[in-house]
Length: 131
Image (cartoon, rainbow, N blue to C red; front, side, top):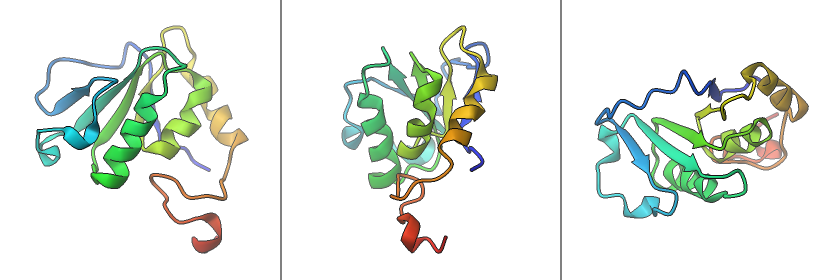
């Protein structure tokens, strides 16, 4: 499986106040967003600590229910072992916690090469996808 999740170091992440970037609070309901998602290029979802998984649900809702096609970026306390699940729930990029080596990330994707069930991006289960 080739990963499609873009992995960024903390230094590569730019938060310059771009109006096409939406910062969604960790406790915000994506279904209650009052901006036009067609005008947004990236939505940053925050993991205040690795044990707080609310951003997974937000990403899934943004991709599956709201059909957001832009970049959904994980920020905050992002660790290597979360990357595969992030990709499966709809994230397209992740900013690794400072001090975490991005070159180690590919091992997670190699370790979990395929899944039986569908996810936020590839919705068809393995048996129905023609694989």
